[in-house]
Amino acid sequence: MKNTVLVINPGSTSTKVACFAEHQLLAEETIRHTTQEISSFKSIFDQLDFRKNLIVDFIEKNHIKPEDLIAAVGRGGLLKPIPGGTYSVDDEMIEDLKSEKYSTHASNLGAVLANEFAELYGIPAYIVDPVVVDEFDPIARISGLEGIERRSVGHALNQKAAGRKVLADNGYAYEESNIIVAHLGGGISIGAHQKGRMIDVVNGLDGEGPYSPERTGGLPLIEFARVIQSKGLSIAEAKALIAGNGGIKSYLNETDLRIIDKKIAAGDQKAQYYIDGMCYQIAKSIGEMATVLAGRVDFIVLTGGVSYSAYIVDQIKANIEWIAPVEVLPGEMEMKALYEGVVRVFENREPARNYKEANIKKVEVG
Ligand SMILES: Nc1ncnc2c1ncn2[C@@H]1O[C@H](COP(=O)(O)OP(=O)(O)OP(=O)(O)O)[C@@H](O)[C@H]1O
Ligand SMILES: CCCC(=O)O
Image (cartoon, helix red, strand yellow):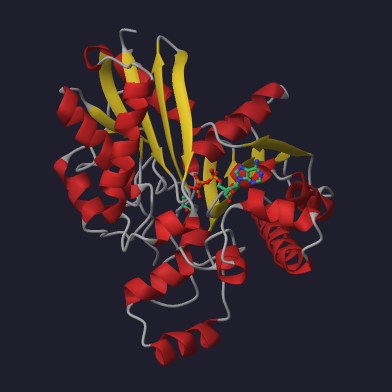
């Protein structure tokens, strides 16, 4: 079909691919990667050809004609802090991602993969609402140590799309409401959204909040310093431990919660213990974001792949339902949100933003 947009979403445990045209979904696939598959690559960028070949297979299998493609869009990765919106992929963006200037994340491959297909087919490449969208209140940046700032890293694209949907379904407007959105995926982020802005977020990638299938979340710092020293870890190795080999993976050597759910159902007490621990910590961080919103919370939304697990959802709900009504949107709405970001540009409802020139305004103190 004419006017087809190729949508590419590399996650920590999956590659999601879709094609949309004229506001319709033409084809979609979530390709899950096993723990072993991902562990066989030394770095995220070593996975480029592996993930690219899977997308080529998807295009061929679904008979997508190159001449029908008008754009490729990828989930945006760890870039400098920028306002939300649709950005054209440019050289500076690719360089920042490839050099891992702002750290490493599966979504760093989104712009790079979109760019590869854009070059192949002679079409433009974009990203939309990358994981670094920064709408923080100044006070949220303070870390507790001079020289280190907290940064806004989270599943902004899905958090906003899921939040908007739940609010719209209940007759509320995102711009006028307060919500907490917990994205529960291979990584976890929990945002406090106040009247259309994500003013704070629990950022698991940098070692905050609950542990997740792959991330440690917050750790006792002195003990972690001892681990770094005793194992002689480099910064890159410490990051890999915090953001790729921590959490459920470190306890159970597995990141696929569908497998772990089955083990719990079959009576595996160790699996249950560590999943219960993750649910306890997720609820605790949701409570933290409720205080950011001073208790004025219209809804709490649980989303991301892990929210398919009824066992996990029930555990979390039991500890948070007193705060606000809880709505569950399992999976993610990222593919459609990425497509719609491109459509807004093609329909001239929004300009494509320029990454080189994009900056957030930080408030200078003192
Ligand atoms: N039906 C299901 N039941 C339980 N867990 C599930 C189900 N489907 C997916 N998951 C789990 O959700 C997690 C992946 O979630 P998701 O697809 O949102 O993340 P991702 O795309 O890999 O990465 P991220 O969201 O962190 O960027 C995995 O642990 C996966 O096993
Ligand atoms: C999307 C950033 C958060 C994470 O992956 O942990």
